[in-house]
Picture 1 (cartoon, rainbow over the protein chains, first blue to last red):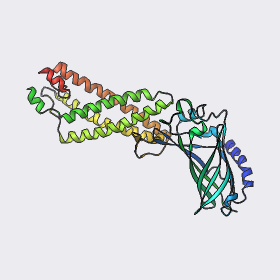
Picture 2 (picture 1 turned 60 degrees about the vertical axis):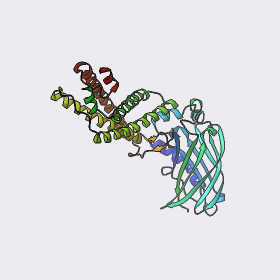
Picture 3 (picture 1 turned 30 degrees about the horizontal axis):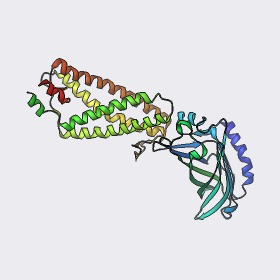
Picture 4 (picture 1 turned 180 degrees about the horizontal axis):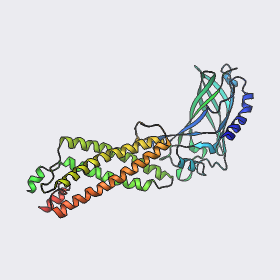
Amino acid sequence: MRKTLALVLAALLPCAAAAAEVGAVQADKSRIAFVSRQMGVPVDGEFRKFTVQLSFDPAKPEAGRAQIDIDMASIDAGSAEANEEVVGKNWFHVKQFPKASFVSTSVKPLGGGKFEVAGKLTIRDKTRDVQAPFAMTAQGANVQFDGSFIIKRADFGIGQGVWADFDTVANDVQIKFKVVAGAKK
Amino acid sequence: MALASRAIGYTRTAIALHWVVALGIFGAFSLGLYMHELPLSPTKLKLYSYHKWAGVTIFLLMLARLAWRATHPAPPLPGHMPRWQRLAAHSIHHLLYLLILAIPLTGWLMSSAKGFQTVWFGVLPLPDLLDKNKELGETLAEVHEALNFGMAALVIAHVGAAVKHHLVDRDDVLARMLPFLNRAAQ
């Protein structure tokens, strides 16, 4: 556990240096979660290990940048048997594609503390353009970014073979992110 | 005699509800036994959903049965039955009613604790009464299973007693729940 923590901290160090406007990202308070729909039932999942590199100034949102790298083996898909299944070939094929990433290409203000980030999302060997609205709020000494967007799992080849049709697991998957960083310096 | 016993027999609604619930329980119980050993697959996800939909349906039908029973009393037991048999019959009926409600309830709670909401027929979401909690989910799974085996034992006693009434005592206890037997006896 301590080793993992050290690794995460080490991974975060460069972003602390890069982010001039908001402080270091606090991995333990940040969260990348998703909601899949199985037989009409929303099922929560999340990724426990990821790194966020962030550079954002709400006064100059267009200059903002973000990169998120996700350790796909850290997935929690909601149950032990689901976790065993989704690292396999039909889903994330974690052995061959251990990382997923999001790299922003642009940020635009939507007004009222809300913004929209566009970027490239790569899962497995597929890269797709995605847009995600997000809100920035002050949380005591920190700032928090909350947003969500919908991806089509078939766009990324997630859930192949027997899982390919959508009557058990829906094509739409909601991705939710919460990134907490130190307040503006 | 046959006419008199039918006049004080079960209503058609009571008979229909009894058999629909019985069939539902037989189906959901067998499905539960079968599905929980399956490796994860789309089929397993479907079967779990069907099982949960069946459970909610049985629960609601059972409430309807109890409401019907409260307003339409069951016919009296035959006069030849000794006291211990009457006591056993009443106890088993009441325990069965209790379990037929408690089993879907523990299934619903278990689903919530395991993080899988119950959405009736994929349309109507039931509220999660418990937060996700792995240990609690496993405990509730054991409770659900134990109650089911308890119910299975009671159903065996219930069916065995009904058959004994028909074949050994030769009274109308089974026939009043299976009206075609009654006609055959006339």
